[in-house]
Image (cartoon, rainbow, N blue to C red):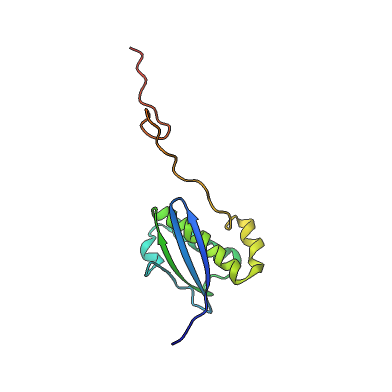
Length: 132
């Protein structure tokens, strides 16, 4: 049995949580929930988000990535994967930390959906006001 060494990173965004495994000496393959990431993420903006940590560190195509992501939707998934990859890159090489920190990739985006309030239609949208 061959055991492959990898580095782990956990990323979060909105309600999504991504568990990232980073395999060194790879060919740049990114697998999300058992499928290539191009299959799951049709929008170019989401693909760009996922590749951003590799572009910032100049390691695009040098790692294979295996990701398990759950919760939330596609945009949350992309943000969580980006965060997880950035954290895993820091685990792999501590010298990437200032680069990723400067790009803002190590900071968890804490914005989540605001809860609905009673008497309102959504979190802040009020019903139409009638004078008479």
